[in-house]
Length: 181
Image 1 (cartoon, rainbow, N blue to C red):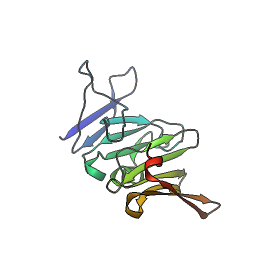
Image 2: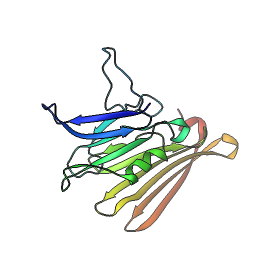
Image 3: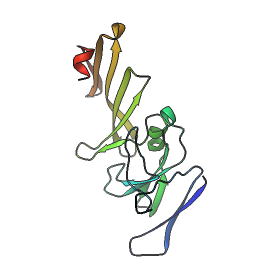
């Protein structure tokens, strides 16, 4: 339901910033404590997630706001910390990634990429990777697509990569029973 989230700095009781969610869903651990930072596809996803979502070296926050994503998955309002303003600012672009895909995206801190997952039915899966371009937004740089074709006996695997501004694509076919072992 509707929720107000008060964020405090560590070792302080003073409210640093307040957030609102129209549809926050909390899950609790075995000790009746709210679970934080769990983001499993097709599994549990916490109401609040912390991470450096834009790779700028500061902690950001994601707050659940309903289950309107693909296949009824959770969507998040993503707030990135703005050092100039000294507070968290809503990122519509990062929030949209959760609305258009299967829940919260994954972070690859080493390669500085955001990875989303989506599907259509049983037989079409897509993993997309984005780079965060400072002051410009998100740039789609890779798509990995698995699609069962030809009466279900083959899987078409397409790997598309953006290289120096141009898309390069490789497609291979595998027998279904071998691919999904």
